[in-house]
Image 1: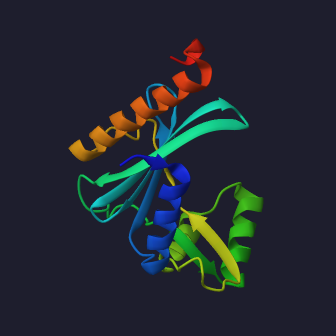
Image 2 (image 1 turned 90 degrees about the horizontal axis):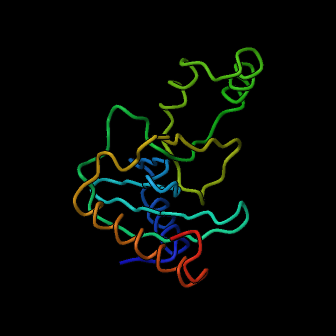
Length: 168
């Protein structure tokens, strides 16, 4: 079922707060240069597709499908992690001296379990996001159908909005 992206994000937010472990987020663009966000938890995936009209104006839709398989154990799961002041200082030192966070610090962060957003945090870190050149490369049949529906619905909205124009 195709929904406004806001509804999809609200569903993801609610589910994340109930069970913040095992989430994965991938970002990229499709072949028509539309932004794609894939959010996966176990065997479910939520997809949001956005057509940017201008930097300040966009049309965005989303939906849910069955994922190809369970989460990737080789990737650190997404989440909001509560950082100690000591760890936060390590991140700041790394960024100041190297322009990036060291592998050792990333491994230390990965050992911290993600928490619900409703918890209290001293210092918080969000991520990671998996940025892909082709986020649709390894999708399930259900995701493929959802992706096509989202593209068609975005095309219809653009046609309605611009009467065809240069976006068709």
